[in-house]
Amino acid sequence: MKWLDRLKKNAAVALLPEVCPYCERAIDKEECACRWCRKKFPKMAYTRYAYGGYLTAAPFPYSGRYADAVQRFKFHDRACYARALAVQIVEAVLEICEDKSFDLVCCVPMHPKDQEDRGYNQAELLARECAEIMGLPYVDALEKFKRNRPQHRTKGRGRKDNVHGVYRLIRKDVAGKHVLLIDDIITTGFTLGECARMLAKGGCRRVTCAVVCTVTTERQEEDDDDW
Image (cartoon, rainbow, N blue to C red):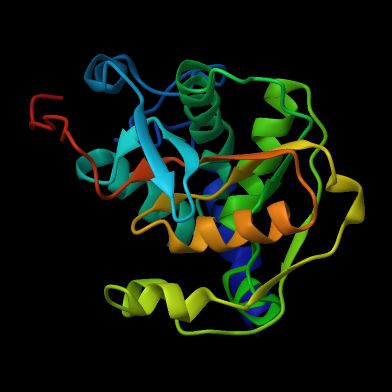
C-alpha cells in the first residue's frame, strides 16, 4: 500500500534531527542552512524569464548542493525542506522584483494521479510557505486536468507542446491581481509560461514567477568541495 509506505518514510524523516537542506548537517531548528553552506550561497539572485516574458526569480543554480537539495525535497520525501527553501525564494523575489505589490501566491499544479503517487506537490509546499512568510493568501488558482509526459523526459521545443493545454484556471477572483507563481525549477520556462498564460488569460494584472533553482543561466556559480 503506497500510503502506508509513505507514512513510514515520513515518520522516519520526522525522527531525524533538523538538517541543512544542502548538505544534511544538523542545524538549529530556527536555521534555514548551516553556516558552511550559507557562505557558499550565490551573492546575487538569478533573473530568468519564463516563456511569454514572465519575470522569474531564483536564488540558486540547478547544480551541486542546490540540485541535490531539490532532488531530495522532490523525490525522497524531504517535504520538511519546504520552509528553508521558501525563505531563499522570498529573498530572491524581494531582490529581483521592482513591483512587489503581490496580492496572492499560487503554484504550478500536479496532475492528481501524479500527486497521489508522490504524496505531495513540492511546488504547493513551497508556495504555501512563501505565502506565509510574505503575509499573503495562498490560492489554488490552477489545476492540471490532463496528464502529460514528464517535462524532464521531453527535449527542446517539444516541451512547449507537451504542456500546452494541460492547465486551466479554476479561480475567477484572480482577475486584477498581481500573482506570484511558484515552482521548484525553471529549465526552458515552458511550464511556468503556460501556467502564467492561463492566469493572464483569467485577467491577472501581472504574473511574476519564482523557483528554487534555474537550469539555464548566464552565469554559473562556483560550487567547489570546500564545505
